[in-house]
Image 1 (spheres, rainbow, N blue to C red):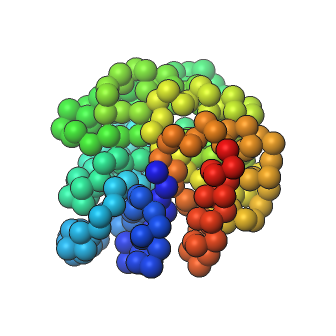
Image 2: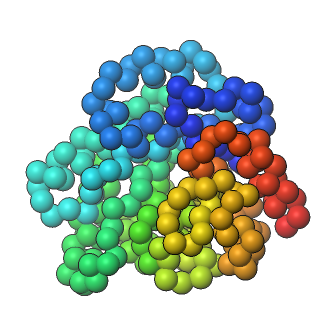
Length: 250
């Protein structure tokens, strides 16, 4: 199934008939969950979109792998608020971007991040039935995320794959990256760039879709939920056409 990421106040109703999934991005925005969001929730409920809904969770400065108790408590608050928002708008999945920093390159940091994350997500999952996915951001490879998923070991917890992030930050080919992560993955984020900056370009821009690396994973992502995530929302029809052309040829 194919979907698009939207700010709920700027949903393009003309394109809804062409997609299967509505991806709500608002909880990603700094301080959004501290504002009055009930009107937004009611807006989505009233609209009664006949689409599957996937929600993005709080991200900036959110660190489930922290060893600092105060930061952990604040992170938990933001995560729980994100989940409550997602549940109220009837989301089938909520995706949190990882805050792991691979450039630290210390095994002590990595081990603590994994163990703290496992403990954190096990605790959170006690109070929700929504499917939670952790998505790669700066990771050089998916190994840390896989350790977390296997440690949590819950049917309602998995991983998501951001192709654009892996194209910029990954230190191994996209095919290798995704093959490791694929068994834990329901949803793929798709946006382009030039392999140097996480610029969230349209699919018809940048170097991603014409790269050999991307061509090797097209067949592998066809059976996943694919969410288009360009920053520019003015060319969504063209993005959809490009994606549908790619999928139809493979």
